[in-house]
Image (cartoon, rainbow, N blue to C red):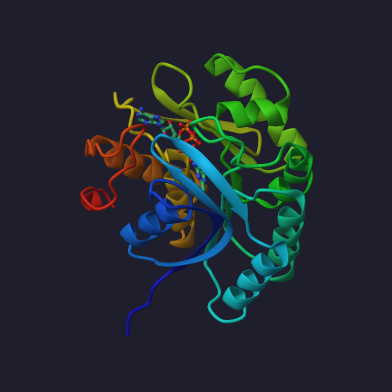
Length: 265
Ligand SMILES: Nc1ncnc2c1ncn2[C@@H]1O[C@H](COP(=O)(O)OP(=O)(O)O)[C@@H](O)[C@H]1O
Ligand SMILES: Cc1ncc(COP(=O)(O)O)c(N)n1
């Protein structure tokens, strides 16, 4: 009999396969785990931009989550694009109802290409209601700026922002430094302790879906029983490996490759 860990992603679909649900399922599968999905929205997008968004009916999102938890209980849950306040409220209700564990929340707000993936009015609901439920939240720099309310231009600012976010949500936060120019350094702040995760910066424009991939990989590592530190360290190695394969497809910011770096796991 095969024993397999199960990971659920609650996120939006990226038809071009680089980010969202598709990146999550590729990542979870590469980790040799069983992937399940509750789709919050369909997007029409590719490597050049987001051209349309169709939100799923929030009640139907709840139904998808019910079907999953009532049958195959996930060992970890990754949450990405959540679109609007009603969707967030349903997800919050279900996470509490089913006492979900190992919740990694990527507070997706705006795509790399500049489209709003979370409606502006829903930011407060996301911060006040969903983020406090995370085992870990993984904002990038622009998202961390929205949550903490000031500009982040240096590693010192990242530290100040992480403390500020911790105080708001009372939970662990990993601020991703991909949007700063030098090293790819991410900062974990939890229980009054900070830990930097540093990997080389890969010189490429093909970074579509890096945030989705990192958060899914962390969820997989948590599902496998790793500590938070170890889960982030391994996930970052996986991500850097996926960037370094040098896959170059599409006319814009291309996706990552999830199969050639399996030896890193
Ligand atoms: N060019 C790069 N080389 C190596 N790692 C990168 C690069 N760009 C981003 N990363 C890493 O990818 C992850 C996602 O980062 P980021 O781009 O900040 O988030 P998002 O994709 O949510 O905008 C982080 O671990 C970050 O350090
Ligand atoms: C459905 C969906 N979810 C998340 C992202 C963010 O990914 P990125 O920051 O790489 O644009 C995206 N573009 N699409």
